[in-house]
Amino acid sequence: MNRIRSQSSSPVHSPRASSLDRSSSELGQLLLRLQQTVLHADPEREQRLRRSEYERAKLEANLEYATTSLSKLEQDAAGILTPGRRLEVQNDLRRKRELLDLLTDHVLDLRKMAVDDDDDDDDDDDDDEQVDNVLASIIPKEGGKPIPTSISTSIAAPTATPASTAAPASTAAVAAEAAAESEAATAEAILDKQSSEREDLASKVFQLAQAMKRQQMNMAASLEAEKDVLGRATDGMERTGRGMEAARGRMGALVRMTEGKGWWGRVILYAWVYGLMVALVLLR
Picture (tube, one colour):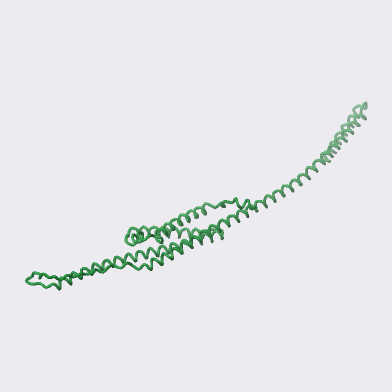
């Protein structure tokens, strides 16, 4: 039994279960790529996501596709008949849903930070225009010509302060923790799945052994019954043989008795023959 368990590979699934597993695996790979792109991005990649509307649009399209696929998988998982298998698939999809929500929230944060950066740039442009207007108003004019002045004005343009890095840092920490939990949960789910597969295979082998044992017992009982039938048939044939031997002896006696007695003796002989035939038929 242990040898059979160690040689077990994977149980036979229905086409529907195989399709669900394949779709779930593809969705998991997509979420892992998005997690690497969004949550574990380097500073350069982070800046590109904040500045490029095209990059954010691609991420949102992938997230929308992942959301649609996950919703379909959740509907298919609800139709699984085996309770243990259904619970296993639903737990895996729940972890994928949590990771997808985390990715969606982070993309929304990137979009908000991009809007804040655009607002800061607009404020800088407005400040520059206001400073130019003030300088133009305080320079005295005579005869419509500006009076040269040696006033040198140094204007320190306000520098746009980047968004606080506390939120990305905390988000990265949460993402790393979620990734670690997801990997641990995935490994645990794989081990549970392999254990359940081994138990199912062992149960099927045990049931097969019991069925073979019952079949052997039924075959032995059938052979015993046939043996009794053959014994009775043999006894009947032996009795028939003994009856035929007795009839042959009587026939010989009749022949000897009727020899030399003419037609009347032959009539008696035929009567005995037909009588013996009727007796044999009745005995059968």
